[in-house]
Amino acid sequence: MLDALERKILAWHERRTPWLAVVVARIFLAFAFVPAGLKKVLGQPFTDPSKTGAFHEFLHAFHATGGFYSFVGSVQLFAAALLLSQRFASVGAALFAPILSVILVFCWSTEVYPTATVVTLMWLTTLALLTWDVDRWRALLRAPGAKSEAREAKSLPLSLGLWAGCGLTVTGLYLLVCAVTGEIYRPRGAEWSKPQFYVFPLMLALVVATWALDRARWRKGLGRSVEESSPPEE
Image (cartoon, rainbow, N blue to C red; front, side):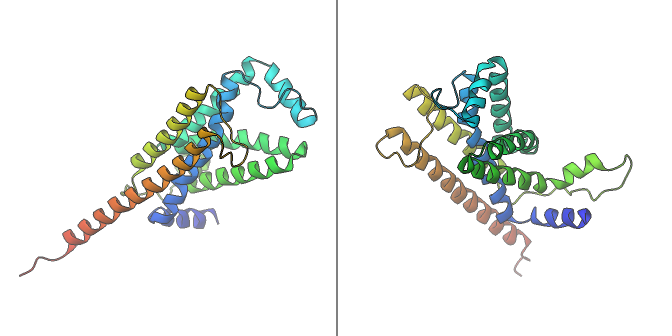
């Protein structure tokens, strides 16, 4: 069964649409942790100190740990950077899996259902990213010397470097907003009255622009390949 799944996923690796879904998911998942990681690294509380209840009281105690609180934030930012790099995204997804598993159980246990629903979607996205690299993880589970269907070195149907640049630019824009406003901005819905809110539509536009540029490059390369493979005219 796992062999059949691995063969199916390796076949998807030859197609452009699944790759686009993967690189965009990596960017959005990584960016979701940037504000949370920054707050922890800077020692800022993750929730309003005046709020009570199991969910908030746990976060108050978590913030009070000091060094541990900052360490968790550092790990989150490191994993986000790995995802944004695209090249090392498999390791980033592997780091996010246990982090999100803990957050998932915590949110459902404390009955913060809206947050738990969002975290569940993020957790499922992480599982999908791990499944995308199933051939890499299965190599760790095989017995030494066991044969495997090695992935052939082939050109990807998109530019990972271009998408890595997109992710870093999106994150850079957000960090610039934080530096200018002096706060780690986290929008609470559509805050049209705040100028910093408009950076989020801009970041989405960057993702769309990257897709358009990558598609244009891909189509140009595809046309060149067809031209080179055509027999010369007599």
